[in-house]
Amino acid sequence: MSTNVRTIHATPEQVWEVLADGWLYPLFVVGASRMREVDTGWPAVGTRLHHSVGTWPLLVDDTTEVLALDVGRHLRLEARAWPAGRAHVDLRLEESGGATLVTIEEDATGGPGVLVPKPLRDVQLHARNTETLQRLAFVVEGRTR
Image (tube, rainbow, N blue to C red; front, side, top):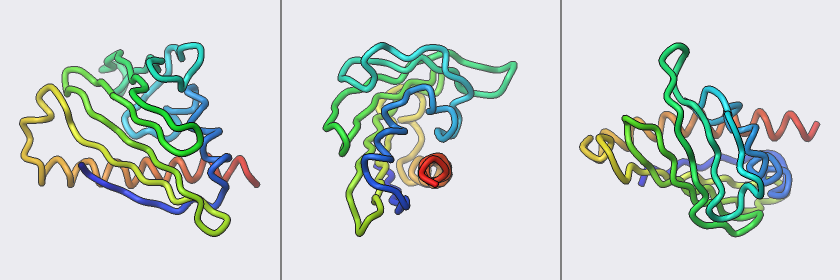
């Protein structure tokens, strides 16, 4: 799995508040263009985000599903973006001196993405998730001012 870590200057509860609002995902997830629907109960296990990826007019509609959850601390997702494939994404929050250490681990689990050699996949995922964490920090820290 590709792993990225970033300190966000907010409490874990404040970070979780953003993660628990599925409508906000296109603001920080690189590649997510729009949200079409958020299942009632998000982010309970089995609920989904119904999103589109890509750039208009080349948008692909797909879903992301919650596989596991530890409220306020961990969210495991299966993200889909066909035809690229599927990926597992783990988001972990850890309190760190009044801030939150956010870790994202991600790897392809299905589709053509798994055919890309892991070292190349990790480089791409690392770059993407560096930007995702930067955007997440902007959203969370902007809401806490």
